[in-house]
Image (tube, rainbow, N blue to C red; front, side):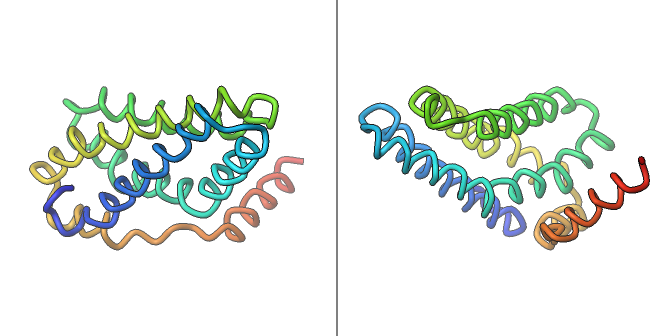
Length: 160
């Protein structure tokens, strides 16, 4: 876990993600039909209640400033951004029929991704980001689901 106080919440979420990934990997490896169905539900709840917000937090307060102001680290941001997309895709496409395989993939990617952010990304932020940028990470306020739904609804109305 990183020492920077502004990154503590995200780092704690990574630690929780590692525990969750281990539990899901065990279900994928050893679970029967009922356990796989429960794992499927747990992953979907986790995504809706925690993970999507975490991914957006990183994309908006970490990846964007890194790409804009520290171009030497664009490749790392692209890699991590692709992993965010892959995690979203695995969850979106997962069905009960594919749960065994997809839960295993999800758990492995979540584990590796969380470790990469802790070991490679966060030490960079501690050394590259200004206090103001770190405070923006700390003080991130996510868009609420209803605000996103309303924005999408407006977009679909205006595009017709």
